[in-house]
Amino acid sequence: RLTGSKLSCGEGGCGACTVMLSKYDHVDKKISHYAINACYTPVCSVHGMAITTVEGVGSTTKLHPVQERLAKSYGLQCGFCSPGMVMSMYTLLRNNPEPTALQIEHCLGGNLCRCTGYRPILEGFKTFAQNGCCGNPSACNASRQDEDNVLSRLFEPSDCTPYDPTQEVIFPPELQTSDELHTKTVRFVGESLDWIRPTSLEELLILKTELPAAKLVVGNAEVG
Picture 1 (spheres, rainbow, N blue to C red):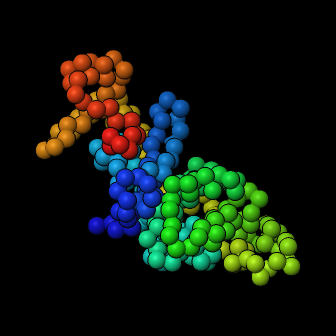
Picture 2 (picture 1 turned 90 degrees about the vertical axis):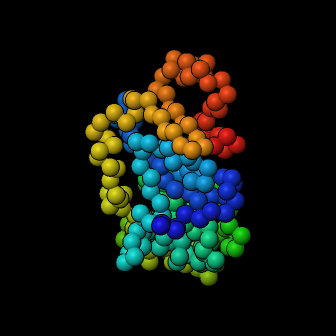
């Protein structure tokens, strides 16, 4: 009953269904976050990982800085694409709290919008960039530069809440303390699907020999 993630194209082309997938690498001891299209991601494929939807960003009483800057920069009209935009930008910040403007543009490459023309969305999100305004007027003078063009700005970045990565929700400890969920073969059998996740190349080759008609799914939208 979480209705923030939207179903639009249904084939991974618009980004309205974007959610954040988080997983812990027990070899490198590192948490990684990925913006994924929920519309073609089988739920059994995320076994042992954490999923964050837009409902997990901010709250009903306080907007997350990503949400606040999207709203203050007039980056939404109908709002259908907005949750996906938020989740793509949010995922980038979880991996890199100080991205470049180019990285911000790239992270939104899979999110389509038919209303805004993208300029206000990018202007809002680029305030997170290394060479943009950090939202804290005492620590950043970017918002005071180019005073002659003040009317060309859609909003005042210094009025926004600074982004503080230490205030984010932590990765679920139960998924980090044990690698049991990642080292064991997983098999889910449903009415129309038999999903198997092998843990080694040898096991995969054996399964492929036993089940020659089985399809390999490795993030492939056509198959998934």
